Image (tube, rainbow over the protein chains, first blue to last red):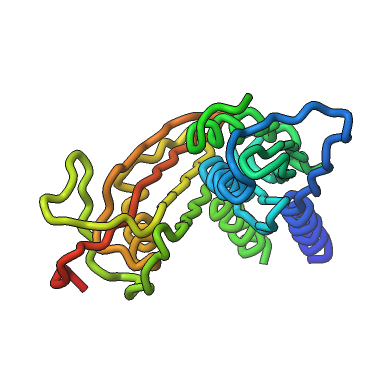
Length: 132
Length: 123
């Protein structure tokens, strides 16, 4: 009985761990950003749409920061999800906005996770036009 | 007892093998929400003949592991729900995208929610 309960608690802890998401880290100031010839509000909306289109559940939509996490899925071998992504915006004028994107992978379930930076940028390009 | 524990464990695992997320963003000042099970006209390949105004940007995202694919039929319910929540009476410009990563099959649907300009459509 004790053994069975122990196994159940271990399984529950594993599932709990898998449920954790990492927090995305802002790329260094020296890291290159991409620039859109659009005002910050338009780029922020495109960032929200881009996260949603890539399966992220958006948790923060500030004027200069958007964040979301992808739900975990249990799979046959590795499953997927658990990544979180952040999009940092900074206005370079009335019609220019610099953008930095970063995906963070959680400790558990990392084998089924990937960086979504390219997909997020591609989706933003699709909605507001290509970046510089 | 052991059986129950395994059933619970398997059930929790199976529940987590798919994720459906739906979302909408108001356009042109949006519109008040309608009942979540309201009637929505879906214009998959053509635009409606009646005049309309776009009121929301809709998105439905489905991911399934175990190599199981998704299609429009599996996203239709969430699309209708999001359309109703956004106050839309119809859906146009449906765009579907399939992709995959390892054993996960990804299906994304984006569309525009509309409201007919002359009142008297479904609700």
